[in-house]
Length: 106
Figure 1 (cartoon, rainbow, N blue to C red):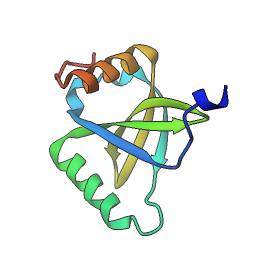
Figure 2 (cartoon, rainbow, N blue to C red):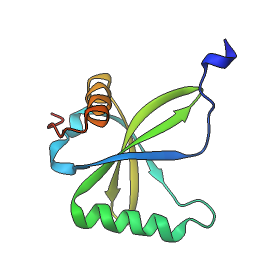
Figure 3 (tube, helix red, strand yellow):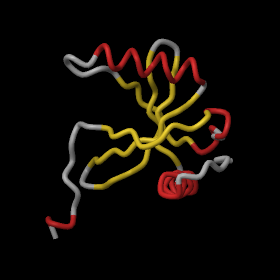
């Protein structure tokens, strides 16, 4: 059974960038502030600035408690927020990442 679980890590893998306007916030379940890890201050700041200037969000993969999940990362004030999403939005995000198409996530 252990071999079936995905190994947890502290890494968040960015999969795709989508226009922030295509995502309805009603699908957000919870929010977490993201900070830079040691030595990651410059890449963190670049991502914050790029997302803010382009009005985009990142779809990312996170492995926690042995389970993979897609999360949404968006700029907020001077940093980043990571949102866990409801099941319907998570399914749309997964399809969007796999197909390469852009559909409104509403």
